[in-house]
Length: 276
Image (tube, rainbow, N blue to C red):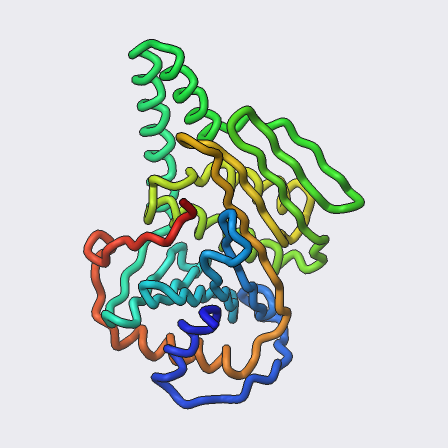
């Protein structure tokens, strides 16, 4: 039910439409339209969150059921992520360059904290420092099963299993990779206490760039402090959009022009629920 809440909220602001798939000719500025349903899990069988990533004319619209009730727009041609808070009627943006800068600063901050812990001495500090370094500079041992299209990345601190399928559409594969990379970095901005983005970025690079696979599932078992934690993402492709999804995008574009703009630091980074 929560999967379509954000889209339903958008559509409530406009006229309704039917929900039949419609074919899409390839766009000159990007891949043919498609949708990716993304579910995130912890240790439970039920997902923590489910979002819909709808790509139209090269731009990706992430409908997040919240809280907050939000639509995020990844526009690779403009080099930015935009956020629209549907409840507060405000919008903001952050450049992909700024996201890269933040990612580098997060890496340096974790590295500095690890060095400080090591300087304090003691076995516990040394172990904690080594674990933190594994999460920002993962020196993975890699194995790949070509028959199952399954990738395994392992280190003393984190284990990653990635499943994918061959993707013949190079434009769609590039679009999915670019958007998932941007969203992983944005997650780190919004909740830097969670798993750092570096293992996730490395897993995406290995699956998509090295093996030309469209991700279908990514599982991370890691340890920051205390008991091991688990995060899992699944990705389900729907290769055509429905009229309902197209109308939701048109409504978002209309709402965008009516929202008050706020600088990113005033928009208010939001956190998602993470597994306990």
